[in-house]
Structure formats: structure tokens, C-alpha cells
Image (cartoon, rainbow, N blue to C red; front, side, top):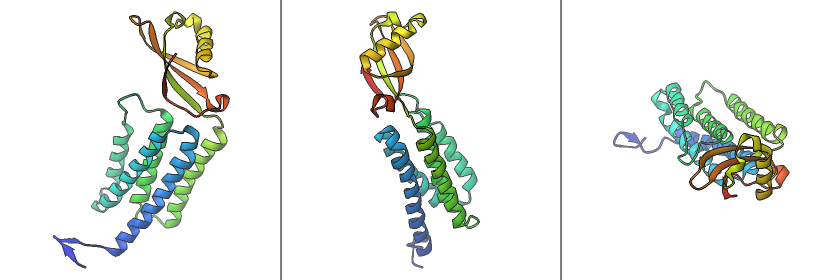
Length: 214
């Protein structure tokens, strides 16, 4: 085996194992993110994030897996990505769950060793896919979307005007609102930020996390 600076130029069996495992992991993550998550949310930014993070995590785990730190390394990855926050706003719980899912799948596919048979590995991946499919397509028929709105009628923000505020928001946005949350109120500009939540099937659209003036 030819070497350069003490490192093999190519280890054919290991290289083919990398290619096969990478292709299999990419297929699983693609199905999760593109076929399950994306049709329900239409969030291209998270689709981009899931596929790239999965790729990086898989390659990182696979290439460093030979250092014999599999367990501690995997736990460290979950700890790091578990505290991820976007600077604009908190990551929604569903998106965080999918992120945890693609990271977990990538770690499993990268760090499974000879003690784990291919049958067990296939069952694990397809079990994850099956559960995600059932939850997303069978049980969760409706998908709750949200919009962040800048609202200018703070007289209706008081708790006793809840129904009036909801009716006004529905009139201005044209959406059938399920619930809403009032954020910070600016009395200098007589405005506030309101997060509204609605079901896509009730309104016939798939937009999320848009910022609007109302």
C-alpha cells in the first residue's frame, strides 16, 4: 500500500465502505428532509440546513470514528447541536426535532461498527423513517404555521379585548387564526409584535415565519 508522509494514499475497502454508507445516509436524510419535512412546511432554509449538517456530521463521525472515541464523540455532538439557536429568533420545536433526527441518523450510520449487522442498521433507519412518516402524514393531518406581524392598534392588546383583537387580525391577514401571542409593546410608536398561528389546510397556503405589517 503506497503511503505519503506515513498516510496511505487509498485504502480501497475503507473507501468503498465510506461511499456506500454515505450514499445510504444521504438517501435516508433526503427522504426525511425533502419528502417528509419540506412538503409540510415549504421551508427551503431548513431543507438546506438539514442536508448540509447531516453531510458534515456523517463525514466527521466516520472519519474520526477510528480514534475509538465513538460514544463520547456522539454525545458531544448532540450536546453541541442541542443548544443551537439562530440569532434572529428561537428555532421552532418542530424544526429542532427534525434537526435532532437528521443528526441522529447520520451518527448512527457513521459510527455503527462490525458488531452491528447490516440488517440491524437497515431496520433502524427504516424504523425512524416509518415513525416520522406516520407522525407527519397520518396523525398530523394539519400543519400549524405561524407569522410574525407588526400590529399598530395597541388598544386591543389588553386581555379583555382578546376576541376583538383576534377578529381584527383575521380581517387584516385573511387567515383563520387558531391562536396568537403578543410580544413587546412600543408605546412610542403605538405598535407591538404579534405571533399568529394558523393551520395551512384551513387557509390554503404553506408560508411560514413571514413578517408583515398589520
